[in-house]
Structure formats: structure tokens, C-alpha cells
Length: 439
Ligand code: SF4
Ligand code: SF4
Image 1 (cartoon, rainbow, N blue to C red):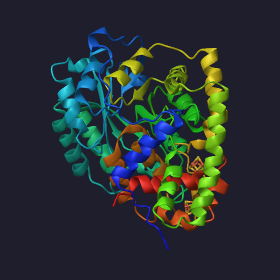
Image 2 (image 1 turned 180 degrees about the horizontal axis):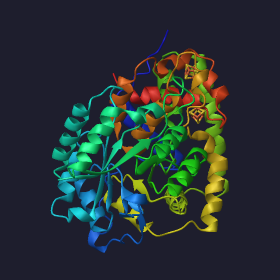
Image 3 (image 1 turned 90 degrees about the horizontal axis):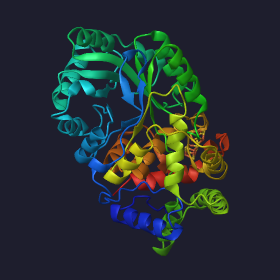
Image 4 (image 1 turned 180 degrees about the vertical axis):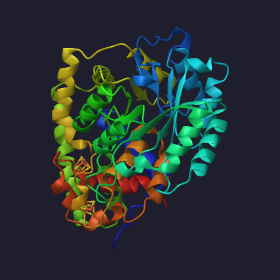
């Protein structure tokens, strides 16, 4: 008898709570705790460092506001000196949050970036203009500092004529000041040659993009390092995302236990995937205890300092859900990675790196006979599990074309064999599917 991976929201929440309790918070949970403020924003630390955003000439705070959904938290961040805000047409309702948060502030002191995805190669200038004007209306602002092309999957998308014609017009009328591009990888099975670095390096050569937003962290540097170096040479501003790849993947075990308790058959391949995943998780737990890495906040802070250490980085987008989280991010402004923190990150990389499916990767995707977009699914899972963007992650997963991770239960796991980082990806995909699919 086949079993359904559909998981009711209530069950997921119970699972998460169980995981937190049983593992004693060994890993960063990323779940919003709605904590009260530990201090009033007036007594917060302030931003200590502003960096040049490439040829825009704007000095941006080294800690930037990612897609912060809480208007009060965003306003408090601005009050503390954060002056770079990242948003996008695709972030539901976020433009309105930004509009409220910036109300009454000196508009010239804030750098706002928003993004438009190219919906089809021949999308017209008029369509981009219409969408950009809607962004302006929602943001209640006279101009957008940087309008980015949102995650082009292929280098040739960068050339989309309608996009550039619209940008030229918007720049000429003062409604957009600069143009940028964001990227965190594409569907490799469609074209393995189109990696994040190749798309962004093509954008650097193109010359029309002034700011890059890219995925980069201490576990995934190889692709980003090249981009950051070239961007620096060409005076392109750089903002980072996905900088704290510290997540929990412990609830797969509970899921299988639930299925068994309910008398449902657990597919042997699911059990196999789980076994491999569990072995790596146990190793990571042992490592964390042995080297005293129990404090996830320390690792998270070190992960951000690692990014701030890079002189080619203009700013790091931080997605805070609570006042406490924002305060902690702001306290990192102007800091650098100490030798001991560097050593701890290296230990974390050794012990837990295998549990992280690298953003902007996709190396294993050509091995999948069903063309499952492995990296994209794991990104959506990251949104759900670490960024509290549950509804958005689930709806994005629902909208994915082609086969989803439900096919992974009956597969020998070709992708896992192809992963050069030894990520137990089959088990993680099954977990992602059960998390992102509600009945
Ligand atoms: S499983 Fe491995 S190869 Fe596949 S996308 Fe993740 S990190 Fe890359
Ligand atoms: S487990 Fe199999 S079906 Fe699922 S992504 Fe990997 S290769 Fe494809």
C-alpha cells in the first residue's frame, strides 16, 4: 500500500516542536518565535560601517534588510542605520510593508531595490513599464534606486529587449536610478551550463547591470568568489543572500515514526534514504558535541562575519523576523571574523556541511531521470524551514512544473550518487515534499 506524504500543518508543527525538544536545539531552527524585544530599538547598537555599492556611488550599510515582513522590525532597522532594503514584485505584500516602514523618512538616505522576473523572452517594454509602475505605486515612492532582473535562468535572458527598453525609459524619467540582477542558480537539468556564476559573469560583461544580488556563504563559496572578484573589478555593487546555511533537517525521522505508528507502510527506499540521512545527522550531532558548537547563534554570527570579511562584498541582506533577531544582525555591523570563529566555521563545515544542499548548485540534476529540480525544491524548503515563508514556499512548490519529489520514494537515488558534497539528498527531498505539500 502506498502512503501519502501529505502532511497536515498541525502535524508539521508538532513535528518541529518534537525536533526542537528532542535535539535540544542543536541546530538553528529558524522558526519564528515571536519573542518580545529584549531592548527598545532606541537602545540598540547602530550600524557601524557603510560600504560603497560599486558605481552607484551610494554608501550602503554593511547589514541590509532582506524581505522583512514585519513593518515595525523594518522601521527599527532603519532607525538603527540600515539603509539598504531588498524587495521584489514576487514577495507577496512586501512592497506595502516597505512603503509603511519608510514613511516619514528621508527618502534619499535609503537605497531600495526591487525585482521583476522576465516572464517570457518577448515580454514587451510596455509590460515591464506597467509592472515597474505598479512597484512604484505599491512602494509609494517617486523612484526605485535599483530595479533588478529577478533570477534570469539563462545568460541570454539578460538581453531581453523589452526589459532594457523599459529600464532606459524609467531611468530617463528618473523613476529608476540603476539596474541590477539577482541569481541563486537555475534548473540544471534544462541546461547545466547555465550556472549562477556564468549568468552573473555574463551580466558583468554586458555592462548594463550596476548591482548584483547573489547567493554566497561559508559552505558555498566557489561560484560566488569568481563573481565577487569580477564585480569588484567592474565596479558593480554586490549584495549577498542565503548567508547562514544553518538549518534543521531532523524531522524526517519523526515523519517515518508517525507513519509507522499510524500503521502505514513505509516504502523501503524511503527507509533507505532516511538511514543515510540519519547516519550523517548522527555524525553531525557527535561533531557538534565534541567541539562544543551547540550555540547556533554563534555559528550564525560567524557565518555573517565571514561574508563581511570579504572586501568585495558591499552588503549582506539579513532576514529578521523579530526585533531580537534584527538587533543581533545589527550588532554584527563593522565586525570581522576572529581566528577562533574561523576555526569554528571550519569545524562546522567538516561536521555538518554534508547536511546542506548548496544554494545555486544543481550539479546532481542532470542525473535525475525525472528531471526533478532538486536545488529549487531544497531552496523552497529553506524558505519554509529557515525563513518563516511557509505559505510562499508551499505555493511556489505547488506551481513547479513537471515532476516533484514524490517520485523520489521509488528511485534508487541517482542524484545522491552524483552529489560531490555527499549530501543525503534523497531523504532531504522526501522531507521537503512532505513539508511543502499539505492536504
Ligand atoms: S544535492 Fe548536492 S549536487 Fe545536488 S544540488 Fe544539492 S549540493 Fe548540489
Ligand atoms: S531521488 Fe531519484 S527521482 Fe528524486 S531527484 Fe533524485 S534521481 Fe530524481
